[in-house]
Amino acid sequence: MMKLETLSGTGLWYVLCIISLLLVTGTLWTIPQSLQTIHGKKMRFFAAVNALHSVALLVALMDCAMYFEHGYGKPDYKAVDRFLFGQPWLLYAGLEVLIAILFVILEVHHMNCRNHFLTEDAIRQTLNLLPEGIVVSDESGLVRLSNLKMDALCRTLTGELLTDSNRFWSYLEEKQGSHYDRIILRTPDDHTWIFENELLMAHNLKYRNLKSFARTYRQITARDVTERYRIIEELKEKNARLQDIQRRMKAVSELSGDMFVEEEQQRARATLHNQLGQVLLMGRHYLEHPEKTDANLVYMVTRQMNRFLLGEDVGPREKAPGAMDALSEAIAMAGSIGVNVRLIGNVPQEAYIRGLLAQAVTECAANTVKHAEGDCVTVDIAESEEGVLITLTNNGKPPKGRIAESGGLLSLRRKTEDMGGIMHVESSPVFVLTLVVSNGVVPEGFDDF
Image (cartoon, rainbow, N blue to C red; front, side, top):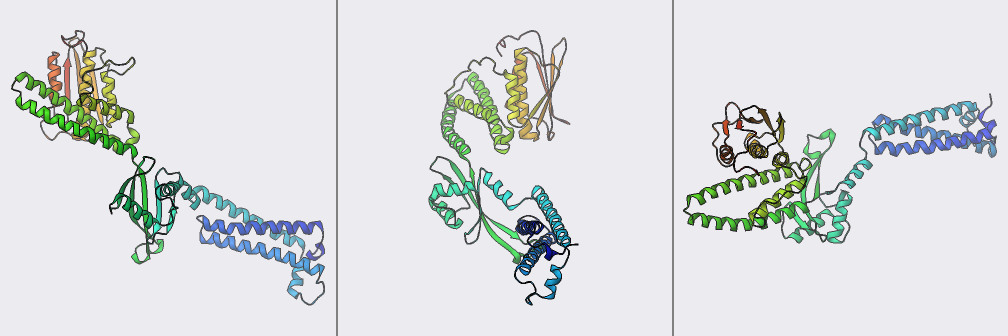
């Protein structure tokens, strides 16, 4: 079998050297990879040893070439060197194959770690994709981590790079004129941002129960609240006008002694109370669950109610072709405050019955959220020759006692009795609202309900 020293200068010799050089490059590359990803100590040690083996093999091959070309027979080379150069070349080829196999094992393990565990690059890329700004620094203000959004905000506000978080926060406090952990600031592009400053405690996993091994960091976050801030400012403006209207309504109410006017005012207050409560519930549900709420519907209903209260919209408007009827709109309104309406049975097509059912659904949905803390209203509809029997129930907490009919329930009772129907309310053991109305004959005054 040919010895290694006899291959010097041949094609096979160059193949062995080129493969050895490639293995050195690959194995040395696995060392920083093992430090950047989640590897165990054994795998890191494994990568280092494999790299050392590949380097030692390359040195032996190069030393053998030098020995053959320039130092053959000289005493500079020890007996160990001559022993290594006298070994079969297949031994070195086998070592290269072994190192290559170990390199492949390390690369496969590294790819598995990248696919199943978060790396520093993955965390940084995720932070850069966030629509919110975030920066983490130590107590001295030295930035340890910052995403693109926060860097852009810093350049927009200060004209400088974000290198000192303490100086950036001092600028925000000076800009607003306050020293709190939460600052609301408007940028030159007319966007409103909330900046929050909080402390973070990072514990060593080995000594997580010892405070002396914990490090303190400061985190500054920025959230875009432009749309919410605009709505709040608009509501404040409308509220001032509403308060003025309320004062004038109170003055008119004190001067009015007519019983008819008093009764109409009570109905108007009940309607106002119901509509305002519905809008407030929609607004609260939108703030808590924006992903489950139709923002366009919230905006439309709020705007319509405000225009009505401010006298900008004094009468009902004709519905556009294809628009929802009263019942469909009531179901959509219930969904906007987080209440699912289940219809069981065939819904009558008479407009006055659907309108009454819409008013009942609206009232029960609002009471489900406010009092029962539920999220579902079930409507059971049964028809007979005498009329239509409508039963409404909800989930959530049962009533604590007898239900006092006021506001929406009282208005619903008056409407039902005006139609010649019957309304019955049960509170024990659960809430049940029963409506009985005649079908097939339109009551007088309800043609366009």
